[in-house]
Image 1 (cartoon, rainbow, N blue to C red):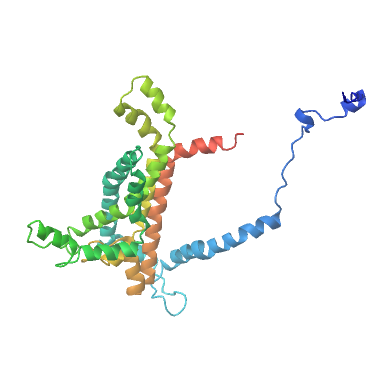
Image 2: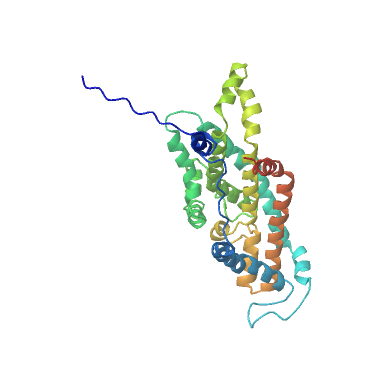
Length: 333
């Protein structure tokens, strides 16, 4: 038999044992601290973004605020005809501006009351496990992928008088009267809202789907064990835990409504007789069509203030509780 000789015993002195660092596996207790980036590194990475922000955000805002106090057509160098608050006084009494504000409020209310609940309901339905749900998700999200200009051209053909799909459909159903979908001053805003709903409800639906998927299924299983019904699950689990997502979609919907321009401009150019005009279209018409840059700048400042005031109030009283927990827990290990 071939047997290996026993390995010689290795003796470890107390001095050697005590020289080992403490901790599991002989790892040192002291944690390595990451080196903080120096001023040169911070400058290299921050400077390009800062330059772009100053050139394309901060400077235009400040320059618009400056020119809003002048009567200026945009030509002949910097403005010199100082008029003070005259542009803002004209703005407050302008029926077109007041109409723009009313239409923004109307579309916002309709979006919160119709568009967002529709997207929410579809998201809850498409969260269920049934054959083809992925295809339906893609189908409902496709309109959002289209650009606003393409969407406007598409619906201008659908609502085209005499030969459009909408009038042809009504004629096939036995309605002989032609409807001025985009030429009726009382109807065009609601037609516009329908187009906006078709365009953007898929975006909100995806946000709601993501929010619903973040809710742990264990909560529903525990509630079912306690005897909760489907309505109670929706009321006491789904709706409260979907609150942050709903509040974000409301915020995005309002800000997007204030900034409406390209879809409406390509579709109706704000007509008929300013019936579908928005703040952005009015600003464009005054500044680049009528060359009243000073008045257009006052419009842009008003548009900026509307968005800013709403954002600050909404963040303070609505989004504050959602952000407070993340900021409070952000520094914890």
